[in-house]
Image (cartoon, rainbow, N blue to C red; front, side, top):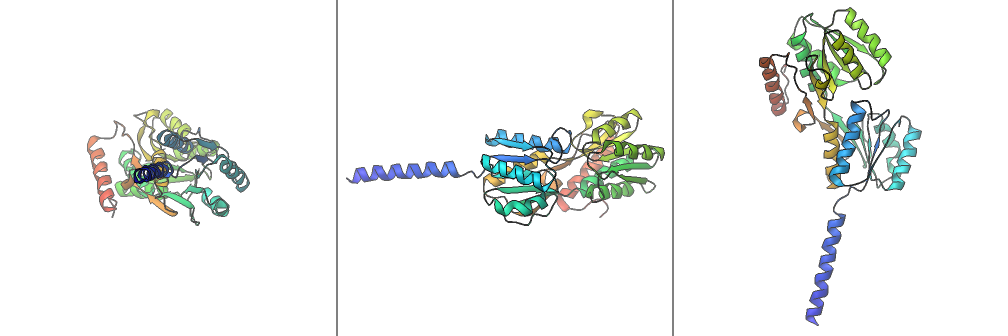
Length: 316
């Protein structure tokens, strides 16, 4: 009788341990919403690659929807994801923080993740890239490499912290530099971006920083045709031309996606606003052009390492 009871107890313990192992992971299925397309080769593409990493690493189903650019379509997509059993949704842009704040309470079993916004509910998180420093180091390189002492920035919006950083970095490196900033007012408006580029070229700029998504690659191609330099944006864009692309200011969105999914799976993903920078290895500079002298590359790399340890930029 005692032996039989012991066997039963052992079986119950084994079942319990099996149940704990099966339920240890919180991540079931993941969804991605992008405002435009996953094929822009910059921001949207990085989000999609992040989802593929989650799919591969966790062996789960992932879904994505493009053109999610209003409260109505987002609510419809979230409802559909919920029906599929999705329990974490990435809104790939700052606009999603507001969308998610309004609807997240209706879906307590889903965690909502957005970028560069203000997450207000217990099941919402905003991932904020501290982009000022990456812009600063990119600006330093532009200030070092310009031959005309004139640099151009084609920004999407005024609020982008990398724009201010780029301006400050260029002026820190080269006190004679003139920085021309043009605002497109859109992440993807190629027509407006090319008009801005023409105006910048007319003012003798020879290093261009196209800080946008859809127009980024075409602008760099135009810069190459002129025989000028560019600083890449979001992705390592050295493959567009090693001699033309001096370096790139990279946000490793795909790496951050995997990091967030891992934290969520372990029950460690915090709500609210989380910040990430060079210290977290999700922001870096890209491959340097051979046209940038090695001594200066070493100087920049040393400055980045110091910033990682102290949080201080070269002008501080």
